[in-house]
Length: 357
Image 1 (cartoon, helix red, strand yellow):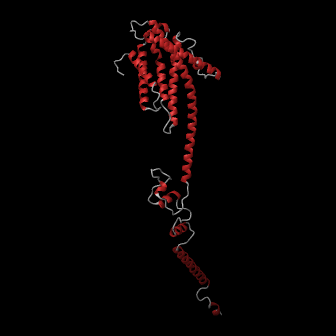
Image 2 (cartoon, rainbow, N blue to C red):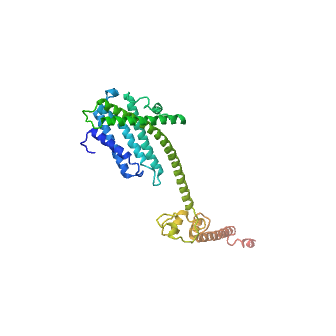
Image 3 (cartoon, rainbow, N blue to C red):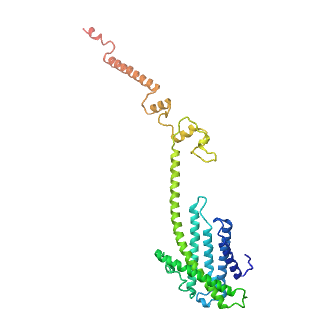
């Protein structure tokens, strides 16, 4: 919208745009053009709300009778913003296999709409003397306390009939009041008639808000249940996929049997079985499983060196050294014995006895 428009012109154009979008009920739910238009419309209403707050059109201490007639329509800003949220919720449906994401977005829109309708009813309740006893929702006190309605089915049906009759009555009053003011310029229009028209519209919006709050409560409860069930199903499916992958990874393969590429990768590039790209399968197997228990861990020479270093075997040099040492010891003993005998038997001692007398 043009930035040259006044707040009143912006507000009137935004309301007409919302009515136009609400009339387009025959379009598909997920229509990007509709969703884009609703997003822009929501931004426009939020901008108007900031303008109204900046202009400080309403005083918290003033009653409805003290509010200027030209400012009364802006009391419904929260209602229209909530209506946009409801339209966005209605035009968005879970699809493309991502139901949980769709449900979460719908829950977000419903939550925002609920806050908007409640804020609107609180605004009317705050300024007072706007709603009659017939316009005040039966469950409004419970909603302000965040309690759910506990009315039995019969009471709910009676309340629904009561709201329907009241809605028809308000719509008829608005039609009569609009025809009375139609064709008259601003100077000719009665301020009292104009205030009465605005007040009747606010009452009708309050009735719509109460009906939408009931609808939001039911739909949110249903979506939350579906969302929780969807999460459980999603976790179970992920667990099944994980288990199936573990099973496939342990499937035994016939030794020597080669697999075709089509058995591993599907025609669309989907991996059917886990595989590893390698040049040498023997090296890969050895790096994973090791050499095993049947293969020797050292050569014969390494084994002999190990035994020799621990003294379990004698080398050839040690054998020769031991043999030579044993031989040397025998000769030495024999030499010692000979020396001892020679000491005991000096040379010529054998003939000394025969020569003595």
